[in-house]
Length: 428
Ligand code: HEM
Image (cartoon, rainbow, N blue to C red; front, side, top):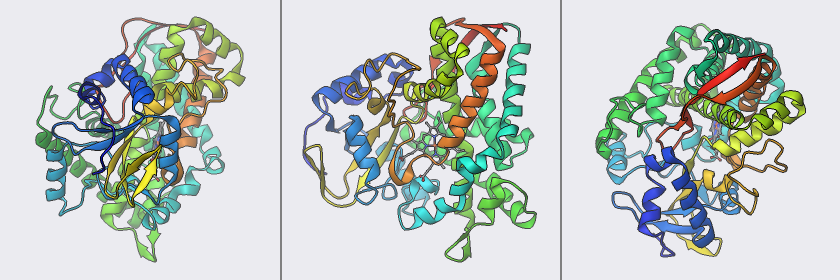
């Protein structure tokens, strides 16, 4: 590991503490200090391998775009304690990953797998499913209005709508959606006692990894059966495209197809749920902004980008240095591990004036919530489209919204956002 500036222990502890992600402001304050005083610095935290913490927008972007120097495959792409890394490596015969999806791959393998579904996720294809998404959005708003004038928007609307969309596109039957939601929350919310598999408030790193492995095994069993079914009975769904995909002239192996399904079935909804709830949270706090967007729908794309920036549902990814290099004047050695802090990049005051303010008219809005480079989010057009359609329907049918209680964020260092958003509303 290279030598370099070190992060003071209290700040280092904050940026890996799920409670700080739940509390939010202490996290934003810690990132602001790091951007100002130590934009690339080493975190040496008991129980973890040392890693570089990258907090400025420009540095995160530079690293994300250089997929030759900074790799995804050599180590876990989500921060994990040493005990969890050891457990996974033992379980997976030396591999650092429980799942093998696009996120865990590098070139030359990565582009081959990504090409299988790339066109499907492009706007031209999404146009063909837009009407279907609108039907789901309308039904979600019907359900919300049928609840009277109050709901928990995060739980009742934001977490259900993108789940239904992505499962329908993937080809998972509606009756299995609760199972998919539960497994996704276990995978992403493993540190949150409201969301993890055992509801434990505290767990050892090894126990957490063991539980995570059970969740992944459940996903694998479900999706391996689905791949077999689609090979035998092809349909018009994304599951069939993946199951019948060919890599170097051979069918995609079961483990890789299960990983492909898992990334779509998890990244495909919890993230969009978080930014959808984030948008509603901001509007509920600011009646003027709600009225402005309701009256002028040309502001809708700006509202959506700002919600994605302000919420930043994917909160970090890790990379591993392939060859000795330098970023922002800091020398890094091959094998070094580093953390891309997307929230910090999206709150970088040198790019976003008054970053904590939600401003639907913010322009330009060069947020990095979808990452950048070869791994840039494959579902970004789908996420934007889903949010646009839902908010078109919501703004048509709501006259006003306000908070009806204290919203709560999930306590997770990886994928996070509002988990509770008590909302009072008046129908139009
Ligand atoms: C990758 C964010 C929605 C599928 C990623 C990455 C981020 C991200 C940060 C990693 C980028 C990088 O390493 O540079 C988000 C956010 C979303 C969202 C904030 C919603 C607001 C979706 C949806 C889908 C999806 C709706 C699919 C249905 C994927 C996939 C990858 C990915 C498959 C892996 C791409 C690769 O490694 O090549 N996403 N995502 N995401 N996302 Fe999303």
